[in-house]
Length: 107
Image 1 (cartoon, one colour):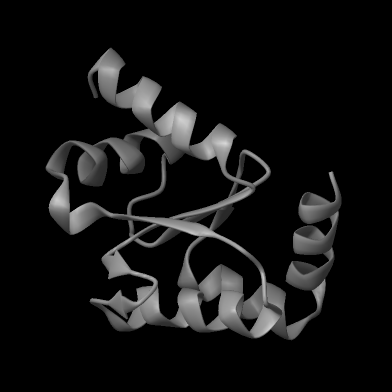
Image 2 (image 1 turned 90 degrees about the vertical axis):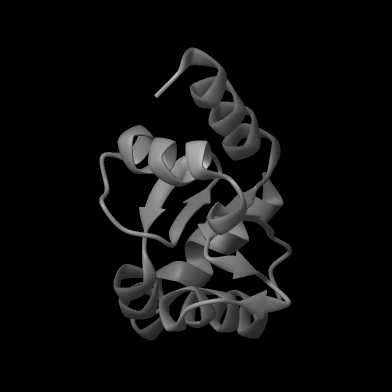
């Protein structure tokens, strides 16, 4: 990953309370896993931003190195890597995600 790509990712993660790196965007997810994340965040009513990794190969590869996580989507809340689709589903089902989102939005 180039220093420029790392800086772009840093800025996106730091400037948005909830940042999702995904295939497609929140209006039109391009894979089922990305759609799962979008649906969960929509149900929570949480404001979030997305980056379509299909439109930017540097970000697509860079985000995997940045988080040391091999798959997309990737969700960051308050600058911290939370996980992908399976982790988001699990956290939503056990109530943990709602708490993390509320704390992030209140800070």
